[in-house]
Amino acid sequence: MKAVDAYRSAVLELVQRTAEETDCLEHVCRLVARSLQGGGVLHVFGSGHSMLPAIDATFRAGGLAPVNLLHDPALAPWEPTRVSHIERLPGYGTAIAELHDLRPGEVLVIVSHSGINPVPVQLAQQAGRTGLSVVAITSREHSLASRSRHPDGLRLLDVADTVLDTHAPEGDVTLSLEDGTETGPTSTILSTLLLHSLAIGAMEHLTAQGISPPVLRSMNRVDGDETNEAVLAPFRGRLSREP
Image 1: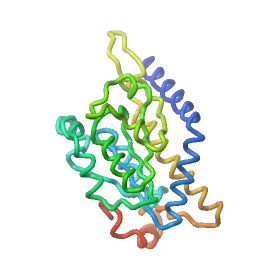
Image 2 (image 1 turned 45 degrees about the vertical axis):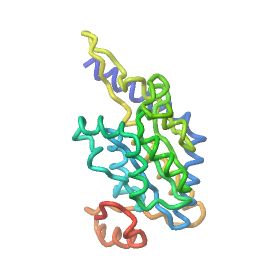
Image 3 (image 1 turned 120 degrees about the vertical axis):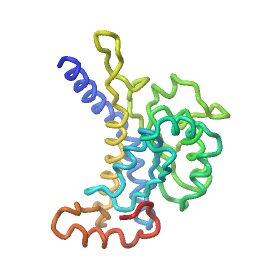
């Protein structure tokens, strides 16, 4: 089990490295809190496996209620061949932004390990033109080591207002087995940590101002359904895939 131990150590080391993002994270938390205070929602997006952290932040017990997933079935991780083609299509990210109710002053978090494909880049650009603050959760190491597929050679980290670096390594692998097999992915773990961290930080800012944050309760706890219905009520019609 040496490989498992090495993987665990690598994950823990990278989790600790996310502390380097404290200043940027604090800035994002303030932006999200300000948006929520004004009645806004937090938008999240990811394609392929980067969709998993975005899904996890949506309708999550203990998480913020007003989180809107910019969901596109064609970019879902269970169709990897389709994703690999579509996330490289110029203009597709712009269309995704135009099809959603994005409002000035709100925050959009885009999760992309590489940040080199046109879809996340053009989604970020369109959201920025609409007046949103765009936050990228990405790996600087991988992104800068890879050639951009955007027509203008842009990466997500070039167009986002704020970048939260996962510090996940190039190729999203952390160890090699005896036969040279590379494995040990970490990007999903680290992106999920950063996404939940910015939500929790926003909650903390709201409570410091005497505002009770709109947080969901487990539906499997007493009064969970009733509590969630009341918390979600002000945001009905603005959240995709509402329960």
